[in-house]
Length: 274
Image (cartoon, rainbow, N blue to C red; front, side, top):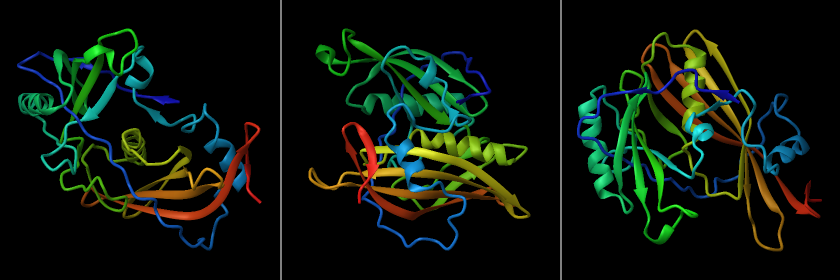
């Protein structure tokens, strides 16, 4: 796994707090007709082996958030959203970020007490201990850590992004120099905070391209949908494509189901349905 190449740096605590971004659920995307060229897509059996492997989630070189590998306890990690919960907020001012996070913490069903604040070139992070009554959600411990983040606008501005949509406007990437790798890192980071109402999901591959107009990056996904207790699962093979315009910094996304097939688990082994 490709871990973060930057470190979280402590910042001075002003009057801090915590924030939250709820998970989004979507309707099952409709099946799509097969495209003309599937030469770069693994065959059904290869996709199946990754989709049903409990130890597989993303490719080896995928960007993995540091909290996923450094936290030894159960934890929550979210972004502070705008009032409509449509998009992640951004600011380059620590004081403003803390005000947003404090208000968000105060409004949450499970609030926490402030521990510390940190920042890096991409976001501010606020750390809290979340209190749960009667150890709900925590085994043997009354609290669990909560991490709230506010993006820096000079890294990415997600204002106006409808988080309930899989297609359309995806914000701006302001980092300089703008490269294929910077787009890849952002897309792979955001994937870790995306909820799909499926029984299994996996990133089969992550790859990019570039031309005179900008950069593109694609996540090849396998999404497994339960179709009933006596029916085979439906496996959708999806290309989730992101493109950034080098002139405007605007990102657009396109969610395209390129193939579907059915599968089942028999005697502990996943196999294609006949």
